[in-house]
Amino acid sequence: MQSFSRVFRAALAATALTVGTFGAVPAAVADDGYQRGPDPTEESIEAPRGTFEIGMAVVTRASADGFGGGTVYYPTDTSEGTFGAVAVSPGYSSSQAAIAWLGPRLASQGFVVFTIDTLSTSDSPTRRGDQVLAALSFLGRTELADRIDPDRLAVMGHSMGGGGSLEAAKDYPALQAIVPMTPWSVDKTFPEVTAPTLVIGAEDDVVARPRSHAEPIYESLPADGDKAYLELRDASHSAPSAPNTLIARYSLSWLKRYVDDDERYQQFLCPPPAVDDEISEYRSTCA
Image (cartoon, rainbow, N blue to C red):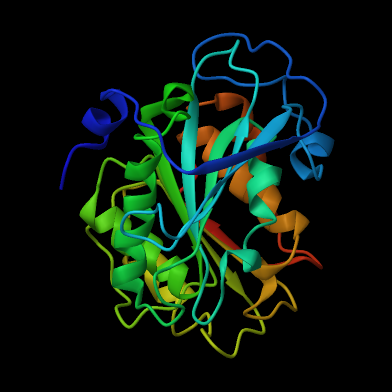
């Protein structure tokens, strides 16, 4: 597989992007390093929008290479430097519309987010893993490449897309983080996945039951790695398909901590949150 760093650092090429913008509050200047945006608070990590104004670029199916097209959401202000990039795959029988809410929500917090359509809505987790990696590679050949750090890449996915995020991490260990959401996979063991992984399960999921999918997947990840298991109380398999504050809160904190190496977000992950009326289970290797 071609190096993502090499792709991103290659000469930029024109692609079929239809660009528009929608507003948010202008970004504040970060302190240093990969920190992007102001100091986080409980309110800011749960807010529907962050402090970055964002733009939107549509990638047509015809112009996509190795996936089914999608939508890129990105911060318009580059005064703080480059951003990490996150590709997100929908689940079985779903289009990008099912996970589109994550695009502006995460991008306005300081990420370039690519919500994709798959080549077929029935694609397997393995094929979805290939496609989120193809989407990240594609970003490196667009006019948005100059705002992305090729060494700070992550993937997310729902259902079979969640299984796909794990397959992607097997194939490309340099990923900085992955977030499988109510993941479905025939393979339940991923000891070779070394990327920091936040597995999100749903207590009432009857499609990918936590005891058969999310939990054994979490348990199979290396014990000495950075990993966490969040189970949503009274939630179904489709919980990630609609705006969800709990998913956004922990996904954002995970991406900030491991993609941006932003220790300001450690407080929201460690010590682990208590079980309550929203969380039925939480486990992690947090020290």
